[in-house]
Image 1 (tube, rainbow, N blue to C red):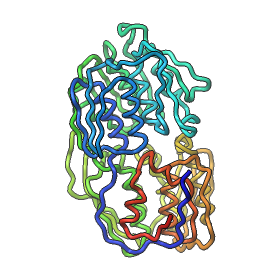
Image 2: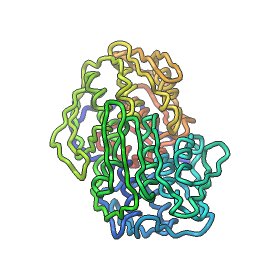
Image 3: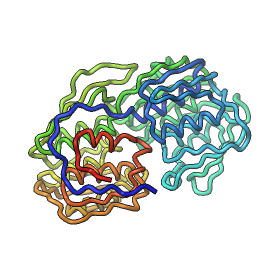
Image 4: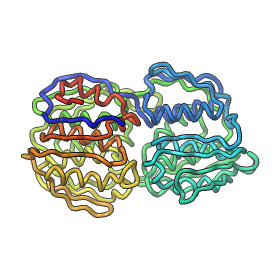
Length: 445
């Protein structure tokens, strides 16, 4: 068990340029699609987090040849439905909901039984949202309560895997992507009506020339996919993760006389709700050097300290594009002038920990008043907030984003913090504390 970190001083002013670890969503999707391609796919700057390493380990157990050195990865695929493995193998997906849900989509054709397990946190999360649509493809599941562990046996024959019609109404990119991956192995056209969510899978399908048609409306995307199209190898340079970058954007905004440049960040429009929200609250952010890369948008992010922050009545239309960043957004609201209101956020409690509840709890420990319901929170901001007492953060299901939020709070709001389970960051951002140190902090172990 790792020791808690102790932070008892605010961060000093800084003016820096940093690089952030590769995008987790893209790293996992690249690996899964590379395993279905014909030939050698190469990735540079792949994220070496536990979630991605678990992805590569699962593919190895499915008979896929994987080579990883530093942040370079090669995967040799043999095409659709070419996994080779023994009956009753166990795949450990760790803490990754993305891996757990997406890989099930690739296993709807598995003739042999496969068991999926995960860590304590992931094993509490609902999988019925993917089991229901994947059952329509002919896959059969065994699970006690629609949670991990789950056993899957695919259709008896590939001919029985029929295309489906699926309505994704939550705004879950994981559910949508799971069905999209299952559609690769079907004869015919799968049709998906999906509430707006991140679209990395669609962009990768387009780049790989998978037959896909997308019609966009204000609230929904209508997606049609024709299966049985062989996939070419994908050579990829993974851009920096916007979710990881968000913590350093807020660190800069809440620090005195500081400036920061974050290089080559993925600014996919379906992921930058955090930028939109923070700008509305008065955070000084500039996006420069924009370019397109294999369907994704990449840019450098410039951010400066913000003297005055404004409360926000956050439009719920921004929720899906900022769902992983709300904890750090709540911290900005704590330092803003006025009362901020965030609604329709029940999905936050379906994450690694019940994040809506934990966000409120942490702010209360800091001395910030909140009003919480099962899907909303009001935050009564205090721009003069100064913490003097000891705050201990523990027993939060080792949620990496809880740990990072509290670290940023400690470095910008004062007080003495004892934050447990620093190893939690290994799931998504292993170099988080290393980057913190680059910015000349007073953090100690």
